[in-house]
Image (cartoon, rainbow, N blue to C red):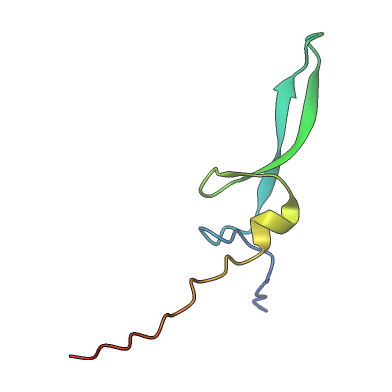
Length: 67
């Protein structure tokens, strides 16, 4: 059995699937909002790219004082 690794996974929890966020419109109809919800951590993302793009780590700042 082959195991595949994907680079497309949640940047926060590592889940490999998401759902479109559905909301009720003013007229009562259900419609997609254009946002996406992770199936693992349930966080909502504005775009799919935001869901899978790793967050940049804070820059390391050199400390001039040692000791």
